Each structure stands twice: as structure tokens, then as C-alpha cells.
Length: 296
Image 1 (cartoon, one colour):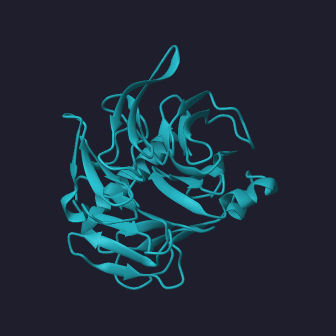
Image 2 (cartoon, rainbow, N blue to C red):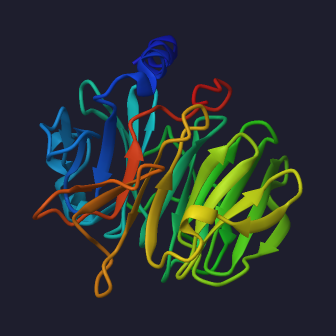
């Protein structure tokens, strides 16, 4: 799909925005990634993907997508990671896979300038890996590796031209230059267990850790409690487009990493999906392709 068309589709989704009562959610956790309405009730799935839908991904990689753990939308695309070891950039309309590889305990990914992708390789990998999106395959070599214990989240910062990466105890700021990827700053988390890293607004991240949730101010470079979720435990994902302020979030149960309940703020509503093992939930609004600035 051409870049201008992806941008058009992304702008179209943003134009619909939260005035549309059928605003959609992307849900992942097990082998299927799917899109549903955010309204009450289970809702019909308007899009669904599993690894066998993308013939570009070899049969030897199918078990690498047994437990999907992130599902980030870009214009016309969804970037999927799995703790089973798979990474895939999938074209929404055709379900064609534009990039795939294996990364141990992959927990999140993001697109970078220059046709690259960053992947957080969590426990057992303990690093952020950078790949050239023009090369796919099992075990392809990354162009860079950045050590980070318990790597769980990555987000590209277009304004500052840096990559942010969240680990168990640290948030890293990473720059790219002629000498490759370089950590320029490290920020100790207020408490340990870094899990989800997502945009809260233009200059602020939402961060979940084992027993708390925080906001990180990118201008002041300081953490503060995320008031409405400050003491929530086992929060797996937080997603909030800056233009709406409407938050979707998910947490595991007391005894597991998953649950069948999707939660919303500020209403405090819960959408229950019996039988589903949900891990992360994202609004179906496209994130910015590097250089585009789509998601507001």
C-alpha cells in the first residue's frame, strides 16, 4: 500500500474520532488479534488476524504467534508482537505481512525512520533490537542491539527524534547517528516492574509498572502518579489519544496475566468479553508513521 494511501486512511479514522459511538478497539492476548466496537456488549469483529492469514510468514514461525502481546495501529497497518517470539507488520486490507522476524519474548515494537523497526525483547532477551524492515525471516540479524533488562515498551518520539524504551527499572532515551544507536539518558523508575509505555499526550508518556501507574513529563523529565490509576496493580496497557482524553486500559487478574474485562476512563465502565484472555487493548487510531504526525 502506498504511503499517501496509508496517510489518507489514518486521517479518515481520526476524522471519525470519538464522535462515532462505534469507536473501535484492537485487542490481543492469544493467537488472534481482532477489532471490536468499544460500546457495550461483545460486538461483532470488524477485523481479525492470525498468523495463518499471512502467507508470507513461514509455517516454521506459526508457533511464534501463539500469545500476542501488543497490537499497535499505523495508517493501514498493524504492528504485532508476541511473547512466543514473533514480530509482524501486517497490511490491514490484504493481511499481507510486510515484515516478520523472530525475537525472544517480544513484548512491544514501533516503527522508526528509515524503514526500520524497534522491538523490545523482554526477559531472556533483555534488549531492544533494531531491524531493517526490508529484510524478513527467522532469526535475521538486527542492525543494532541496546541492552535493557526486562525490555517491555518502545515508542518513537518524532518531535525529539529519539526512541524511548521501557525496562524493568529504567526508561531509556536513545538517539541514532552515524555511529549507530546510543543511549543518551537513563531515568530510574519510581518503582520497579516497567510494563507498558504509551503516549498520554504530546509531551507525556503513561507508564505502568507492577503496582502503580505514572506519567512521565518529557519536558521536565520527571515522573508523577497517574492519578486515576496510581495504585492499580498488574496494568498491562493504557491507551489515550490526546485529542479525546478517553482512556482504555487493561489489567490482569490477581492470579494471571490476562483477564476478560476491558476498562474505560473517565466513565469507569467495563466491557466484559467472556472466554477471552486479553493482554493489551489499543484504540483503533493510527499512530504516526515517522515524519507524518498522524495521531493527535
